[in-house]
Amino acid sequence: MVVVMYVATVPNRGSPPAVLLRESYRSGGKVKNRTLANLSHWPAEKVDALRAVLKGEPVPAGSAERALVEAFEVTRSLPHGHVAAVLGTLRRLGLEELAGPPCRERDLVVAMVVAQVVSPGSKLAFARGFRPETATSTLGEVCSVASADEDDLYGAMDWLLGRQGAIEDALASRHLSDGVLVLYDVSSAAFEGRTCPLGAIGHPRDGVHGRLQVVYGLLTTKEGVPVAVEVFEGSTGGPKTVAPQVGKLRRRFGLSRVCLVGDRGMLTAARLREDLAPAQLDWVTALRSPQIKALLDDGTVQPSLFDEEGLFELTHHGYPGERLVACRNPLLAEERARKREELLRAAEADLEAIARATEREKRPLRGKDKIALRVGKVIGRHKVAKHFLTEITETSFSFRRNEEKIAEEARLDGTYVLRTSLPEEVLGRDGVVFSYKELENVERAFRGFSSELDVRPIRHRLADRVRAHVFLRMLSYYVAWHMKEALAPVLFKDDDKEAARAARQGPVAPAARSPKALKKIARKRTEDGWPAHSFETLLADLGTICVNTIEPTDRSIPPFKKVTLPTPLQRRAFELLGVPYYLGYAA
Image 1 (spheres, rainbow, N blue to C red):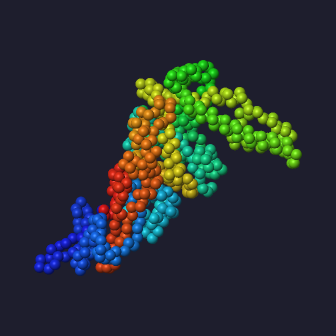
Image 2 (cartoon, helix red, strand yellow; image 1 turned 120 degrees about the vertical axis):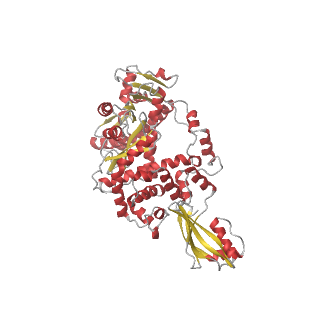
Image 3 (tube, rainbow, N blue to C red; image 1 turned 90 degrees about the vertical axis):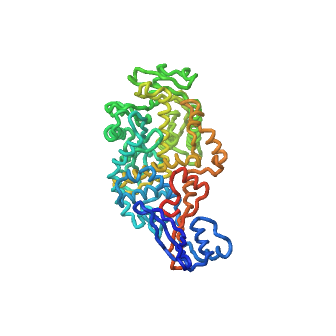
């Protein structure tokens, strides 16, 4: 409810007019007024000063200003602008209605989604930040959850999990339709504790080794808008998560014509044959290195064919009913050659140290097993086992590069082959390449999960709580994604996509920024001359808009609240978002 406070002068027949402090508000579709205090005994200059404050105008200098300072005290200021930006966007997107019917659980879920964008943290930290006595923002008040504790939040998570299917169905109906590209990938998140059934040791895609983890798979649109997420045991391999996603696309979302885009480790030959083919889903993926090598060896893919455009389309008897698009990126080839040489040199330095240890006079390294253990650690750490030939005895160690294996791997530098079941009239050759490269949008979503929204570490012990935790993060990222798109003109983000596509040197070339974005990055300023921000620093800047609790020294006048006036940049940000900066309070 928006409440506007003002000073009214009411004629009083033969007596002096009454000066009243009033508030105006809307109830049941009607505008109503309520008198808060009678200010008739105040001096005129003091009334004028108060009227100016309530209108957001400068206070007249002199005694009136001094009187006003003495008449009011700011007893508390709570950050509000970032809450208004995120909560307003969430409501504009209709996510509140998608979550479910009005109830306390829905209010708590909305508050947690907003809190995760504003200031990621644990449920205990959220509950503390909602309470009036320990509040860190206005979120608890504007969402009517100021009395909530962590147990209430856990109950709301359980309620949300029961709504996950309906919410994902609604998001799919909003963002997916027959014939669209759907991106899919998996990641992992470290898990705290050892009691959750989902926690297991597996391949750490988030780089956290030696810890229990969970695996989660994310479905997004080709632009990277998250639509559905599913949590699996930490030891689950990526290909094993494909079948449930096929079921979602066909049975739950009701899509009969859809193309799933996944990387070569996800959409393996077995998954294409056993999951996607029976469901009659199309797909775009890539061949693995041994498959590309076989095409090079039999002459199907020849380096000279890349001379003109860097890509060409072909068919092969080993891939019946499929289209193959071979690509070569010279810049990628140079980068992989550079990285390989750096790894080889680093490994050689470590291996040379082992060789010297076997030759030193004092306490030389002895024993074939001991020497082999140290050598194994070095080549395992640098992942160059196939690139070296080693000779180990009880008293010596020698090594040299395996030039044949190195040259064999170098043949594949910068070369990749995409495969798809789509006919050319549906998706052209260049479209296949662009579609596969859209997987970067899913990876960007995972980076947002891990860094911006802190999906890890996970401290919940119940499997369903972990699932609800990850789903909450997905909803938070959904709001953040739309905010970044709307705020692109004042962020470092490129907001001229057409120019960026035009600047790209073909489908194989790396993505390019538009001239407008390059200028913004170089100057660190927007076209309007304001400082350019990252999403995080802009939210922090919006957080300087506070709700100030003002208490008059005249106790006959009740305390009131006033929202800080935004700066021009902050006004621009709220205009781009299409939400009011004073959300929930008087303007």
